[in-house]
Image (cartoon, rainbow, N blue to C red; front, side, top):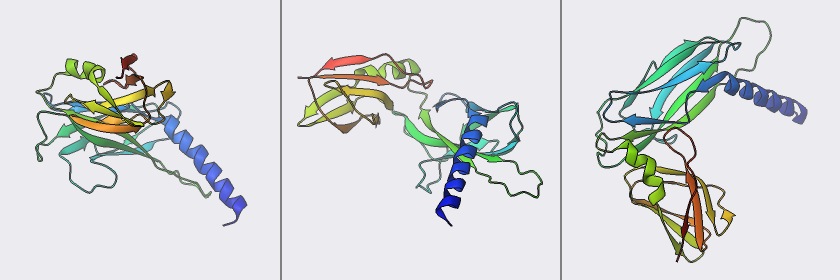
Length: 225
């Protein structure tokens, strides 16, 4: 394939991918499954003037794992016409017991496949997959506590690095992290009762987290010894 043809192909793919992403909208950047409920739900919307799409959805542990997960999505496969919305229902099957003293995290995948119309012309069809985090929160854990857990992170300098410890049973996803006035490029997600180490250190740390609704919390600050 010549460089010119390859450039045209990549440009077309980029344009079409942008169009797909603008047409199909998933109603959230994360989904919280409350263990006290029978299911968790999230909407999928096709924009008004868009072509029909085939929507395929499933839950997985991660992209490289073939391990079976205890969740099903219904409907797993459906057609979504332009200007319409459907609701995905995620159901915990209980086939694999999950910890009841901490959250568990999975990935919800939503693949959008554009419909193909009968035509003599060649068309470039690209399926786009949206992945959002699915947090399973056991019934024993309170949501009110989850909304405040990000404030209670602890930070400790370790040479030129900083150790962040999450003493809560909730996953905490940082949106912003600043050490001694220098912003960390990729703020981490800290698992329940776990620690992560990030490069950089300083006398003061500032951070923001992502809440249950995908919004950003206010900033918290802490002086380091």
